[in-house]
Amino acid sequence: MAELLVEQIRPGLNVRGVFALKSKRLLPYREAPGHFLAVTLVDRTGEVEGRLWEGAEEAGARLKVGDIVAVEAQAVAYNGVVQLCIDSIVKENGQIDPARFIPSAEGLEEAKVKLQQLIDSLTNTYLKALLSLLFSNPDFYQAFCLVPAAAQYHHAMLGGLLVHSVGVAAAADGIARDYPQADRDLLVTGALLHDIGKVYEYRCRGAIEQTDEGRLLGHIVSGALLLDRYIARVSDFPEDLRLKLLHILISHHGRYEWQSPKRPKFLEAALLHQLDLLDAQADMFSRAAAGREDKDSPWTGWVKGLDRCVYCR
Image 1 (cartoon, one colour):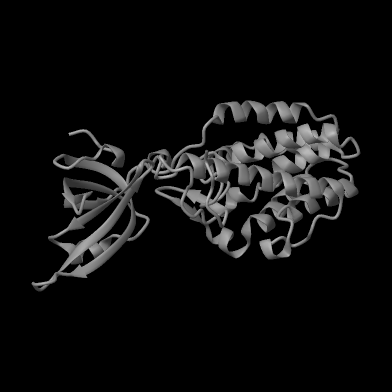
Image 2 (cartoon, helix red, strand yellow; image 1 turned 120 degrees about the horizontal axis):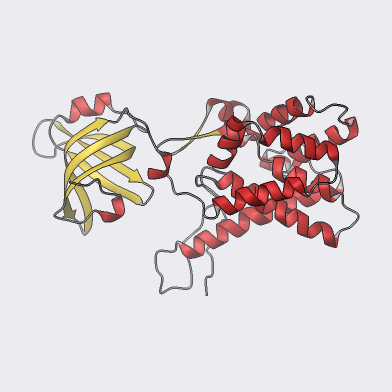
């Protein structure tokens, strides 16, 4: 019996698969003593409800939300939707591939090539040396290419940070031609660096999770600390350039109410904030339109991150 993804499950199938445990509830039987376990199981293709009728108390005690679980079950139709009648559910302790549970961004290999092209294009030797040093760290580079740019709203998928950062940097490269008074190398470098703290803010297993550091410090603080450590490793790095880079990073959210410690105070910082917002919103609008449930309607439902419905025609 092959392992199935959620999108492959149909009523009548015997199901074996590995899923992330999104939720669990121990509920009482309506007309008999005892409890059953109601769970929501997810992978990168969707989610499915499941019910464990025997051994519910024991399973509910040993499993926790976020666990990766191996499940054997029968798929049935209940109230018009697929539901799993679970025979066994156990925690999976082997090697976990996050790509089974979290969708991956498109164009990752192209984004890696574009990242290197942008670094190679810099003429400022200090900025080029800084980026080369940072991205030559294999642990950092692997994390930068893996983690999402957000947990929910934009580029919330594996590789999302890479795609978003390169997208903002490519836009920065383009807009610098229209605003020649801006320092193109500073703007492109700031774009590539603005979210680097997210390598410490998120971890990915069965879902996108926020780390303790992410909760306590946030990616702006973590990113500024990381950036300053690497600047210190570049010989004779100019102090005014250091301050500008750090300001770009800590001001890129643009507003105090958006958890930005500072508002942008020079042109490149102001441009970076707008380009970051532009790339994030372009992704949210595009994904809202592509993911709308009623394909016959030109309107999506309410999109929380945009605080509106989206017109798709």
